[in-house]
Length: 71
Image 1 (cartoon, rainbow, N blue to C red):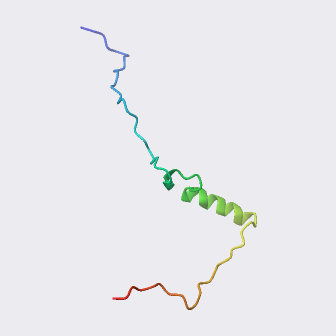
Image 2: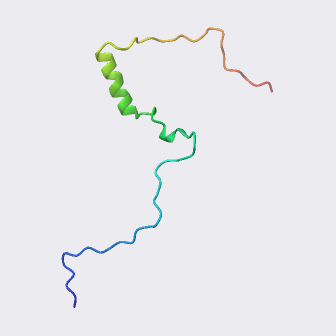
Image 3: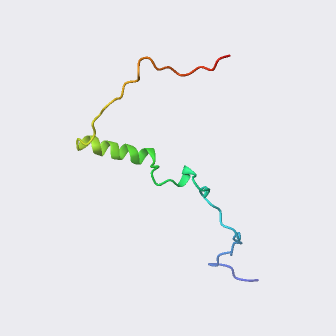
């Protein structure tokens, strides 16, 4: 009988690696400008605390409406 105490079994690993994000040219999934909601909230809170935000709101044009296709 073999003594297997303290030994770890060797697992087979796949030859190909799994990709976590799309690598298609122009795809936004790896865009460096995209940040998480949590990080965006952190930076927004920092800006408010330091008075670096204008807190501006742009009002919609009063005569603009969503176009409705003719039936």
